[in-house]
Amino acid sequence: MQRNFRPGAPKKQLEALFDDLLRHDGFGDLRVEIRLLKRGQKEVIIYCGKQYRYVVDVPPRDALAAASASGPAQPP
View 1: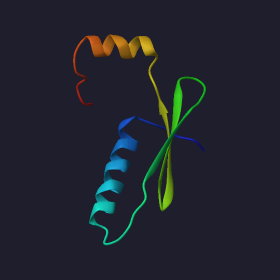
View 2: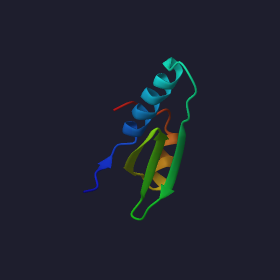
View 3: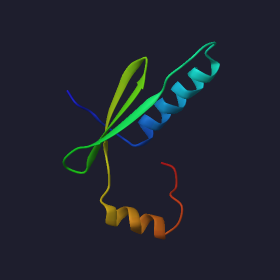
View 4: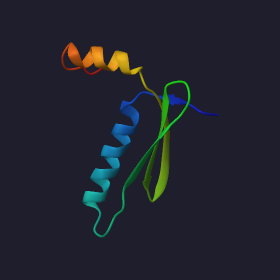
């Protein structure tokens, strides 16, 4: 079963993993892949010892351009 996530979900996971790596007493590795999917979606894969996979709905480019022209986005 595949769930769609809001763009904030992978960001929160990435931030938490980054904080964990900074606190870790040793070496760490963190890698992010973003793949294009159909229907305006992207798959975000975060590698840090395990894989964290997210499918995120991405608004069309026209909507992104209009949002950036109107000013900074407000957090949800």
